[in-house]
Length: 431
Image (cartoon, rainbow, N blue to C red):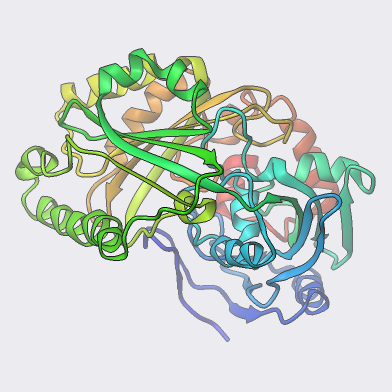
């Protein structure tokens, strides 16, 4: 049955030949093999939270939401095996039920496990890598329908090259992920002058388990978040205050300002001052309840990873460019940090990284601004997030990842007929 599909942001749409729900791993294998034998393409859209056309296809879209839930827990090795179609939000709840947690998470949890891992999604924390580095093994359905176990001990070449694959090697049906005992975080959220943040960034990052900040364009303020592990008792925001500050102010009220700014862009600099520049809040809650927040206001996003030491210079260039060109922006610029890892196509491969993410409210023009930011990022050996808008192509990306050509060779072996190709994989990996 044909259907029309759209991603979360609405900037990518598709009219696939069919959209089928795989009811099991064997069914998934059958669907992929049948498409391959017919010369058709297959893509798995997950939650549709990528801003790129990573899931777009004129072939067959396969929904793997039935492949969800925790399959097993190994408390000795601190690992869980989970269906690849499980959303991070659901996984967080399931882990909490058995006294476990992810060591780190991003600030959005709508994505499926497969979508988040395969695009190198990450959280923040100078001593913690992204989600793909927490993978111990995975099961891969190849173009011919074969199912491969991939780990450091079984099909190690596929494991080391394929944890981040942007869906170009096959369909992952299951992951075994490293987890930790459930823990609490003490969150301290307060505004700081942007220059003070940048002048003291090394200390702020080093002295906190998880540090990030949001610069408010058209102001000199940054909203900082320090999340640190604690043994303190739970002390969450009171229910009404939490709803008011996290749901109403950060979503409904902020959304209203965005709509007003879209109708009257000249008001945006004044509207920016409505975001808080004084006051702070401190609270303690379960880790996953602090890592991820509701995001009801839709937007377009681009994010680049750069060497962590380059963050102050790069962000100051972005600020200066925005001021010089007169861009009117109603979304904060987000900055996060991760440790180096050994995942071949991870945006933090081989280097401690800082991430600069820029956003534009849905329905507003974003391409000129994003391209200007990207030009600055290029000067800092930046790597674009695989699931967020960018304009890099294979020739340029191959210079940014030492194992890029090894990945292409593996792709040729696993998918010579390009069953999992689309215009995005053509862009980033070549035809």
